Image (cartoon, rainbow, N blue to C red; front, side, top):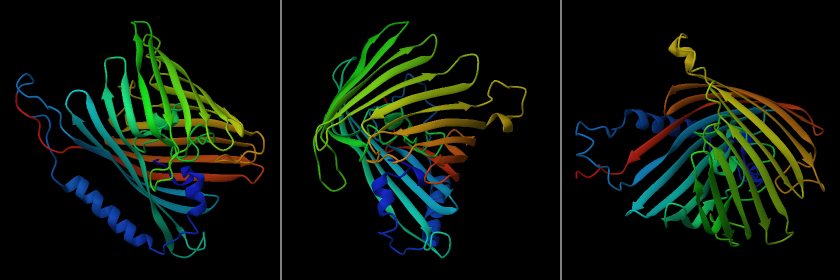
Length: 377
């Protein structure tokens, strides 16, 4: 998935030095700059044509979406560079079928001697999803193929680099997503009931074992359910997953979100647990949009804070730490435009393995390109 340097999966983290390719970071910077110039200088398609709304229809147009990002990380004095390209392809087929695919290209580059020498590393390619969605009716959508595991808040909703507010994934992220974060199989999801006072959302899935290159998955089954209260702008939910191969374990999560109407703040909290550990994270993000008297420059800032803890059970491991950990983290982002964001954060990890500071700086750019113009009715 889209992860910053400190948010790489354990599998990627273990192989990042052993598989160094010797490519210099200068080439990567040139490529990144060239792509960025193309994004901003290249032709753009104006979707808001002059024709009247009742005369023009977008039809069922394939769309290439995603993000381009660059994150520079410093963890315990070791610097890392992580450029990313995350394309998402959406191809509608009539009114009921949608083909979608999400691929991540994430570079990881460190100095050859960790603190000195030139930057070397490699680019990881991950197929996050390659699925067919069938809208059976207003309450059921069937999904077949490779899809992100619907576990807790972070997996499906916050992993894209253009969405999450802090670049480090939570300490408990591996619970319910280890080791691949995606499933190969079938899923049913939708809104079971929708009332003015409450909405009920659900998902249920089965994943088969796969050792296919770029499409790995473990055999598992699980589901997620939540209730959303529109008046209070509160959502609460539960996730459950059962691993069906190897040492079979249960993964469980409970989460809560709240966006009060009277104050521009977005609060999220999650508790995760399995055989190897449990923990929680609480995150709040504030944008001073309601301060209309403040200059526009200041109203574009976003302040973010997160507190999290992880507690070892049965030795930990399996994508989790083998010691108890605690990390407060604070971030300041700046929204240049709706599709362009500067990101920065600082965190302090407290662990019996040694305390360390983590800094992240960079930017994200979100793009949406229709692959051909809409049809005129």
